[in-house]
Figure 1 (cartoon, helix red, strand yellow):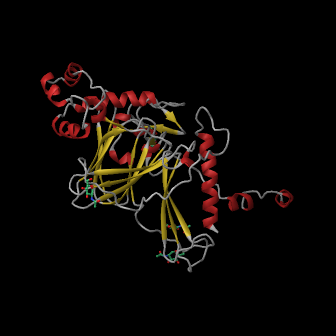
Figure 2 (cartoon, rainbow, N blue to C red):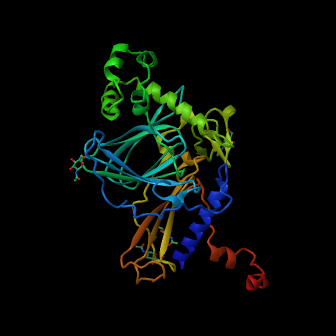
Figure 3 (tube, rainbow, N blue to C red):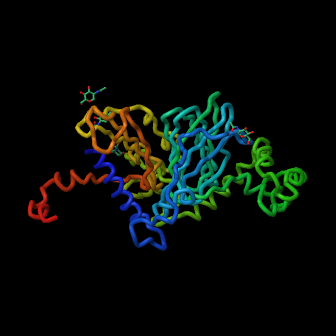
Length: 370
Ligand SMILES: *[C@@H]1O[C@H](CO)[C@@H](O)[C@H](O)[C@H]1NC(C)=O
Ligand SMILES: *[C@@H]1O[C@H](CO)[C@@H](O)[C@H](O)[C@H]1NC(C)=O
Ligand SMILES: *[C@@H]1O[C@H](CO)[C@@H](O)[C@H](O)[C@H]1NC(C)=O
Ligand SMILES: *[C@@H]1O[C@H](CO)[C@@H](O)[C@H](O)[C@H]1NC(C)=O
């Protein structure tokens, strides 16, 4: 029963979200499936990470799954090689990201925009969740000696990726070495040696540069600034993020207090990694209830840094078939799924509860006729 309720609720949510986040041009219909059928994603398979960065990103966006078109959401699987697999500093110009670690130990972080360029970072273990605000430069680095795997939801069907090193040092054609030298306050000769004559192998080149140049943080800040301006929406928070606060006494500078999406925003200068972090959804929860399933929400109430980011995550546990057989779950073992939702506070309308369990019952004549 609950399985049905969840399926229906998620369907309704998908409809609601696509309406709420309707872009211009609006789809003017509930969803828009393009011509190809969604294919088996292979997201359960470990990917080959034998490359220069030791990481592989497997996207499931509108390019792979046409049914995502207009839904404002997509996901990725990221594999990291042991001892230093790196998803290098990059930004998604059109999406916030919520990442959950399933295996391994990741050092993750993002950098706020100018003038602070503050690195907000955290070490994540399996079951830990972290949020990367839209447009900000972020990375994940495997500091464990085992493979690491993470899944992430992104609040766009086509989030876009700007890998900083590729953009700055691997553009085609190359940025003038004088410009880079001045921007990074470094010797021009260094860039002449580093820049590819015909932009070949930007990945290898940028790997070397990433290791060597601390000043690249300046470029990160510029990019973050550019991206956060470009992706401003209405109502725009007009800052990198809005960490929701319950107690306005802890908000820092009171004169700058913003109120967005029903929450007051913490002074961004006072934001800490914990504001973007939540731990726990790797643990099974109790499914011994009449409907044989249990939904764990991870939204703005669990992660205050979620506010204004338009994305959240749920874990859904399903009891094994046989304990309490719901008609839609067909396995003999307990099952678990994670789902990304394209709102910071997706809301749930369980049809049975709202139609038959409303506070003040709906007139039976209305229900009978319906
Ligand atoms: C992984 O990729 C590398 C480089 O392309 C290749 O040499 C290697 O054989 C691959 N490993 C597997 C297990 O496919
Ligand atoms: C906030 O500060 C005001 C005045 O300083 C105080 O009266 C109030 O109790 C505080 N609120 C909380 C939740 O601590
Ligand atoms: C879901 O699991 C949690 C933790 O095990 C438990 O406290 C809660 O009562 C469960 N909810 C339902 C509906 O079974
Ligand atoms: C799960 O919840 C049921 C009903 O509330 C309870 O009887 C049972 O002891 C719980 N199981 C665990 C492992 O907590």
